Length: 132
Image (cartoon, rainbow, N blue to C red; front, side, top):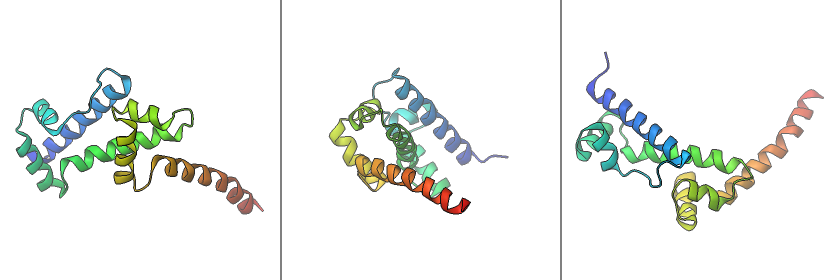
């Protein structure tokens, strides 16, 4: 049987997932704040924060930012998307997006792309070396 804290956490993640789908689809043009998520769960933002911290040891924003980072990395992996386009798709101003990405991704979006290119170029070499 799931505890109430676990249930709230699962519902929190589901709200975030649905919201991020709406952002990517363009049906919503701004990111939720914690109070927006709490409102959809019919609980107070402080209670939501306390429950998630008690259940996971992390602040709710950690999970939200992680999900956004995964989406951002996926969008950046497609070279047809400019960094500015990725920023706007995720409702960020491009300069703020770069700062945000550096904070959560530990490197700039352009450095992340360069890393992806380097990894892609290294893989065929590794496959050839293994096959030899």
